[in-house]
Image 1 (cartoon, rainbow, N blue to C red):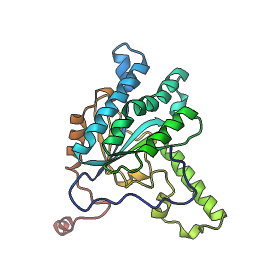
Image 2: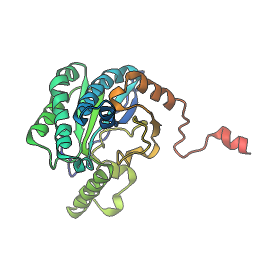
Image 3: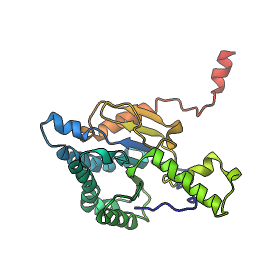
Image 4: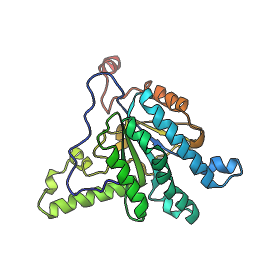
Length: 259
């Protein structure tokens, strides 16, 4: 797992000027427990089914014009769940990488895991670091897994790192800008998400990419994550392309029409 540094990253990877996938899509994987409950199964089975869905979505992403895919796997608030469920959630990244890392490496997927390392086992950290190292030269799809992550926690950690730079004389308070602060976040290597998708029927961010979501488009879908498919993601992207993204500006034609 990539450890945060005290100095800003060099920035997000540049987008290709030519044709090819360019979207950054962030997804809240939600509904595993409810999926299992509706079938009279343990919640652990729902989480395992959700991991299989992740495999399908990663495989489909490139065909759907996605270059950056960010997945919310485990939040800093999920520690309050029952101990057995937390243990199951902790095991999922290890299962995923053990089964899919060779394919990710072969197909050009670059893996990065973001989030706090406190509380994570040595084995989990080891396999996350291995996944990052083995895919470090890949650039076809950038897969970021937010694990033990929270948007508020990440902003707090970024503020702490900037304060440390000020205390060490590496920065001055007056130097700080919005763009400069973003470089202290764990997502500094990524462009802001274009589209945030939440399956399961819930309509909230749940502390996911709070800073980065400033101008993202949101699509909420009434399907539980284990049932999520490439067709659902395709529909979300189609909805995204119907949106008029103005970033706070006004289209000239609208000004003239208002006259």
